[in-house]
Image (cartoon, rainbow, N blue to C red; front, side, top):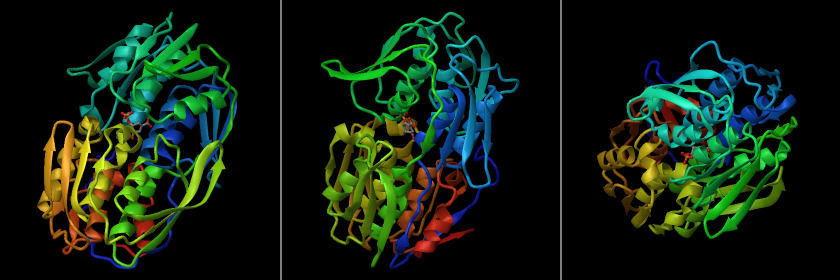
Length: 448
Ligand code: S3P
């Protein structure tokens, strides 16, 4: 289901002493991939810890529509009986991916080299987002696409009956594009090569290897050269989805800016392609420690402990770190507003084509809350007002963007006057337990 129903206004009031343990849900990126690769393998994949947010549930529905059997036990274990590489059935209905760019782009890639036709749509946010970044490389495999002007959804893809393998350099740092090409390469003969100049999250590569595909990554002068041998028989897996660092960001940042707080966020994946926010916060002077560092399912994991940090200062975030924290800039901007000095964020053009234009959405809301923000096409600067210095008192538009809604609610916990969002319903796409989890820590977040 997409976040298109009745808006849910929400309001965050100044809070103190957030404390306790925040068990955030499973990783969204890994959850999508577990369902899609499960559907492309032969036999039963079992998944525990799957994120049961709307985005992922939409992907589960799409996999069913393409012939996989996807079920959930009462204990929360998911079972995917796959159809095998090249085995997708033609869906009888339009595939609605709701709010999820990851869902639609990965599924388009996965079906583009099978001789089936599928039509994709989404909610008002997704239907504005650029799809040519995916359909351009899929055309090289032989897939054909008809969509709305500007390469927007709704869009129909006719998969290639005789796909050819592709060598493709990803023109923007995007794990979704990289993953769409790799998933298409699964049903092409020979070797598909994807080259990325900047490292983006590598969950697809890791998981493909886990399912038994032949895939290698070489670091060369061209960048990261990923080579996949097509038409493997993928072997079903048992997958434990780690907890999402992008969701952990909200209770962590809330604790850092809210007076008297001390919060533990256990078992968070610290894959270097995802953990840029935590490095940045520590450089800003955050009291954020990694406890019980360990490996789980081949991923580095730690319990994060975040305490109120009144002395944080702005920094220049290295642009080369952008891909590893691309979803975390909105909540970083909130922390920056509560720090002293300027936080400079460059090389972040991609923020303009997320669920919303995230630079514009955050800059507008922060200014309404009394924070000075400067912006250009691919950069922005937040001028911090120091701990307790943000006036607040505004209603901010969430633009159907879960991370914008959660970021402003976090700001309201530490602002002088309450901060409201016009619509908190998109939070259910990625973090359905956000409200009870934050309430259990002592955050005063209300509906209405
Ligand atoms: C994702 C990749 C990123 C990220 C998104 C999830 C993924 O998007 O913003 O939330 O799971 O591959 P881009 O690949 O477009 O940068």
